[in-house]
Structures are given as structure tokens and as C-alpha cells.
Amino acid sequence: MLTRLAAFFGAFMMLVFYFGNWDVTHGLVNGDFAYMLVFLAVAALGAGRVLGLDAIIERYQVGGQALIERYPALDYVLG
Image (cartoon, rainbow, N blue to C red; front, top):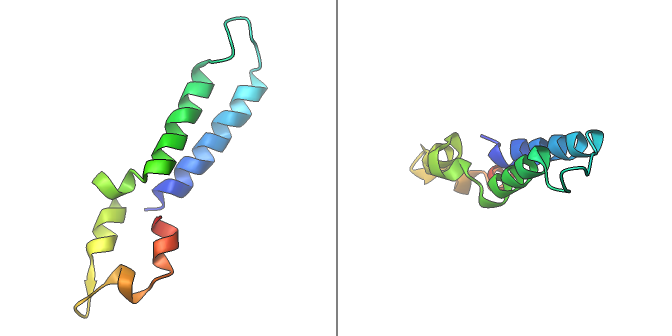
């Protein structure tokens, strides 16, 4: 749950690490930058919908109605 939010803050953390370890001796792309791109990809694609709790929550039925339809604000949280 909240995969996109966690991935966004993971990318922010990697950005801080990237500038904290600023050394262009081996080029501009280092491990921190690569991990930041991975976190941004997870945030953009919403990976929680494939094998995460987000998919289970979206299919959950409450009174014969999908939980996401009953509470539309939940769509903003899940992405």
C-alpha cells in the first residue's frame, strides 16, 4: 500500500545522497543516481498494482461494490 508515495520519497532520499556524495571523478551517473531512476520508475508505473496490496485493495468488495468505487478519495492514495 502506498507504493507510489514510498517510491517518491525513496527517490528524494537518493537525490539527497547523490548531492551529498558529489564527486564527478567517475562521471555524473553513479549508484545513487541509478537507484533514484529506479525509484522514479516504480513511482511512475505504480508497481504495487502488479504484486502488491494496492491490487488487492482495489478488488476488495464492500456490500457488492468495489472499495475504490465506494470511497473515490482512495484512488488518489493508491494512484
